[in-house]
Length: 448
Image (cartoon, rainbow, N blue to C red; front, side):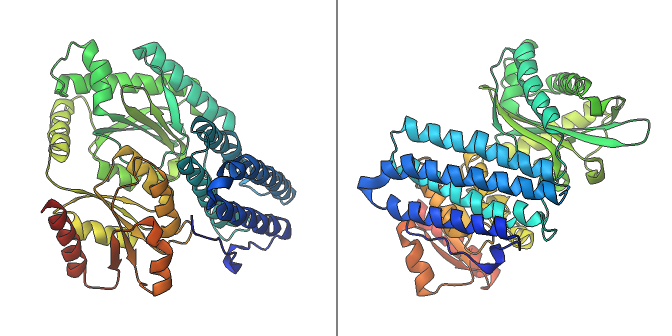
């Protein structure tokens, strides 16, 4: 993979027992990266290295959890659940991939990239939050047993209602676009005036395959009648979930909206529960938001305006998703300002999707493959080089062109990433018109 992870002072959180294990895990990753370059040692790297890395990671998790408990860290439970997700879900999935591919070079690269990205990201976010210097992205999660109950209940309900075998893809869905989406938002309130936001996001084809077919719809298009039937079906689906959650006792529906993807992005923030599922007939997500994050978005749908609002929503959604010759560009940058600027610069001529981290970018690529990726070189958690390593490690993404967005074009930086085949570099501090000119020129050349 051609990289080494250099320990930096900013990685230290000031707790010896945690910093010491972080350094050790960095050292283990470097040894694995070095050995992975040697073809004859690849299988040994994963068989022995995985065990070695896992043993130390588990030891680190245990010691960190003891420390958090000793200082009565208020984020202990959510932090422990992040550990559990890595040790019970991520690592076993990587192991299965290695076994299934007989330790192929791509699988080895994927294993190392995911572990390295997770280690760096976790060190700079969740671990730093222990000292009060940062914040946890998942600090408002439902209690673990309630989240598990929601997962199991959703899988059961989808099977019961639609005879679809559903599997959980992610229990940390971050709001990425997938397919031609329909975005429902329901607001529930109790007698104390406390509110919950519930979002369900469905691929349109899933709704047509289920509710649409039950109504005899064979057109393959969403009608106002089918859409209204979907609204009431989804509302009942959500309320069956809430019936089984003690925390939701006494909450009743107060407001309902249909959102565009852009509106959904504006109100999606720090979910208590955020799950992404694959039904085999299409994806869907279920998200519950904390009351304090409630924001206005969309028009309230009531009996008097339901037909008109649904009709307008379908027209707008169809227009946004109708076939287009526009190329798809994914911009990955940790700066919201930079993402907004790139979307404004390119949005008239290209279909632009944004992601504020490497992990979110990979998920976006999985759900909606772009024609070009613009990748920030100097992100603080998982930098552009590591993200490009992960992209190249995935067979489906390996040939996607990637331009680095960077303020530096020094020889060492360029040499380091040459084996990863970046398409080129765009200098951040040049004039926006020049950046767009370069992108336009790239696509013209490709089409020539």
